[in-house]
Amino acid sequence: MASILRSPQALQLTLALIKPDAVAHPLILEAVHQQILSNKFLIVRMRELLWRKEDCQRFYREHEGRFFYQRLVEFMASGPIRAYILAHKDAIQLWRTLMGPTRVFRARHVA
Image (tube, rainbow, N blue to C red; front, top):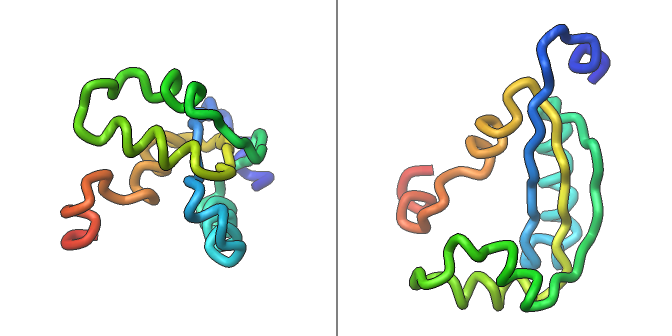
């Protein structure tokens, strides 16, 4: 981690939200946390949140009207989530790669 801080390159920030189903299982949550550390992310901030439905609607507003929107809002409001602000020289792309495909079919059959 010290090498990240000494790097002359600017650090990129990304927001990582760990969903309620993962937060509900301590072993999964710890595994996610360890993946973050083992991929040399710097954790700028970490916080557990409990979003109300209105919070989720506001955060996911860009998806309003899409078939998955209501399920997503209800799911994200169903329990605590963990939010991380992560830093790395290529934080956005690295985090997306670690998350895997966002589409269920691709996630099950490709990743």
